Image (cartoon, rainbow, N blue to C red; front, side, top):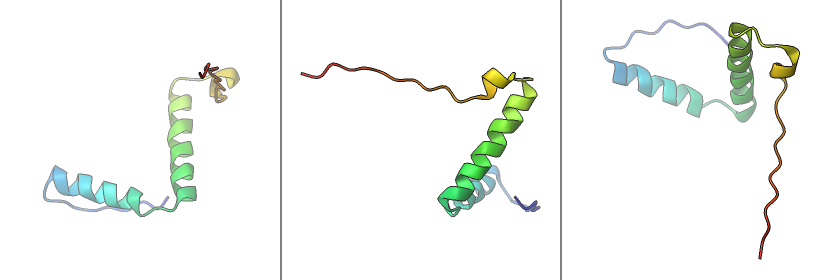
Length: 64
């Protein structure tokens, strides 16, 4: 992720720029960004190895 400084005249302009930035990323880049955010969060809460793993949840549904 490149660091870029931009200047905006309003919070709405800044928000719109963020939306456009993420809208234009390819799916692999979106996953990379998400993983960076996830790692930063886990580091901030001093997560254990068990907490760092993604949970697998299965739900059994009876269908008629």
